[in-house]
Image (cartoon, rainbow, N blue to C red; front, side, top):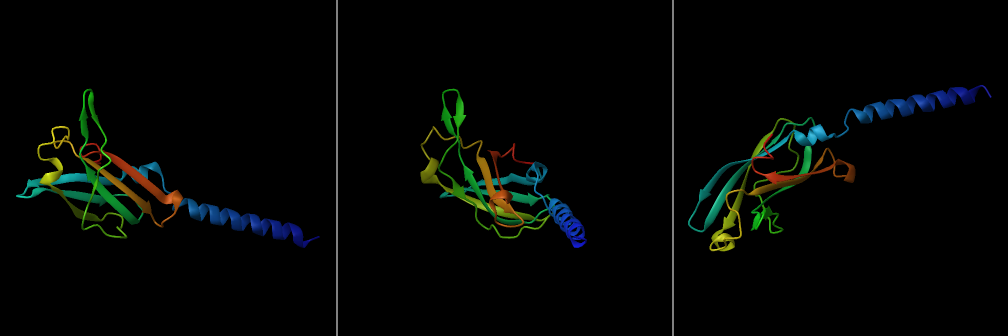
Amino acid sequence: MYRKPVFIISVILCLLISVSCSNNNEVTTDDIDNISLELVEQKEELNGKIFTLKLHNKSGHIIVQNNVYLSFPIKIENGSKGNDFKIEARNNKLNIDPGEEILLTVFAPKEMYEGNHNIDLEAPHIEIKGFFNEVTESNQFNMIGGHRTTDS
């Protein structure tokens, strides 16, 4: 009988310690807000447009895996809507440390937009899908917007 209360107290202490340790690494919406993705340059080339994007991890977590996409909104009568056709950025990497910046490039071939007046080339959308710390469903994040709205 004497050992049961000691055992229960030690189990409770172990649970409290593990919960408090795991909360230090918890991902919050502020962490997602601290991912900066901005369009820094766009150049017209002979065969299309080249976009340079800057991804800056200002969060306190490692981005262990991510994909960055650029798309052009489709013009509609009352504004624009999203475009399911996305181009994946190149030069991306795994394990982007807190405070680290990387430059990504996207090439949009002329055939994709030339003569198509329904595509808004002036306001590309940038999207990032990724994971903080480890690839688990609870650590997944997603952010999309016009290049001005995703810049933090």
